[in-house]
Amino acid sequence: MKKLILIAGIAVGYVLGTKAGRQRYEQIRSSASKVAHNPKVQAAAGKATETVTHQAAVAADAVKDTVSSAASTAADKVRREASIQPAP
Image (cartoon, rainbow, N blue to C red):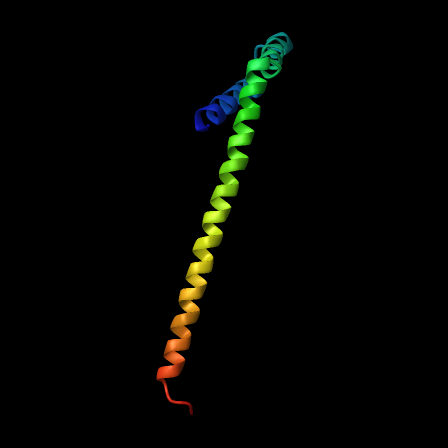
């Protein structure tokens, strides 16, 4: 994923920084459009979206469980310490 972002950044930088003129810009834009509309690229993008969505849900569940456990442990510790110390 990081390589794809790097390549896209380089491509954008080249297009914006090129001094080759409008013709080269149109050529690059046309090529990028062909790649973006390629059915294989679209399928890969869809699969990546599904994977990220699934992994985000898994990560959210893991975080929720961890936070819940930490909160429960902290609450138990506070209760134990409160029961040990004499009331003022």
